[in-house]
Length: 360
Ligand code: KG4
Ligand code: ZN
Image 1: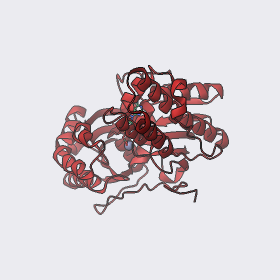
Image 2 (image 1 turned 180 degrees about the vertical axis):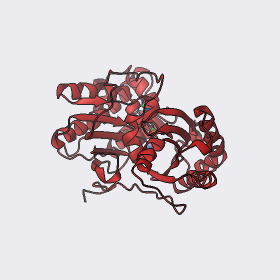
Image 3 (image 1 turned 90 degrees about the vertical axis):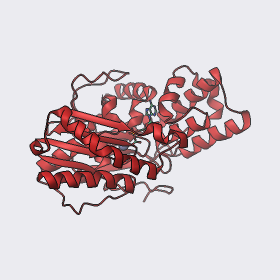
Image 4 (image 1 turned 120 degrees about the horizontal axis):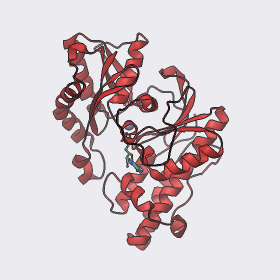
């Protein structure tokens, strides 16, 4: 089975052709980062307009690189939720048009399910993840997945690929982890998106030297929920009082901030695996590129006998391949959607954590 996947939920216009077995035949990602950078974050209307310009050429390129014509496809998968409504709409309309014209089945994919299954993608010649060695085999179900991106941060138990087999164990009550990186980077004058820059500076810093500026992100130790707005405010207060640090002091502050965020992500993920009695841990989302997170998660998993699976970077960040693959599994299960498929801003996965509030 060869399935085209289209992703436009946020600030990447992406399309890919993937087989039911997860082989990536093509994967085209056109980032809008430069477009949103002057605003320090994604501007929804700008995103939607740019998707509208880019989606057809991106889809054409994905088909061409895979050496596949629309007539050869077995289906068209598209991110239908969660995301920015206007941005999602562009991908949906493109997918519907193509599916209708080529007479192919259409399936909507929940973006978060795509991220959670991205570990199964097989890419030829993908560069090895920067650090540290993780098993390159694919995990078996069940696994506990930490999904940490600019838009989402949550821990899931994944018993299978369908919506009903995925359960949120805890999520952030406020900012996503990547959002916290981006906001802190903005406060420090490091540009957008901030995660990669903070990661790089943190590697040169000494977390202990700036520990007093940054509180631990572990409000309620026993809970699997996160909160990152406190640490962001602490950095804001620090900068307001002392000014923007430079040189080594900047590196130290980045190290302390990153260390606190990573500690919370690692401790809660490992605790979730233990309390669920699950032996496999999977990383997903753009923050999975963070070298501090990879190193600490690998060490914590090794200590507790958990197998860690870290997909290559191209599978962690937003991409069309994960959508194509999740869609292929839906098609293989005999599922399909009609041309009435509409965008939804929220995920279809059940939530246990309420944003801005306590547990439900
Ligand atoms: O998954 P993604 O590409 O897009 C979504 O948000 O869905 O994730 C992007 C996020 C941004 O917030 C970016 O700052 C963060 O991932 N990020 C990182 C690193 N690389 C990307 N955060 C920390 N360390 C990194 N190396
Ligand atoms: Zn994403």
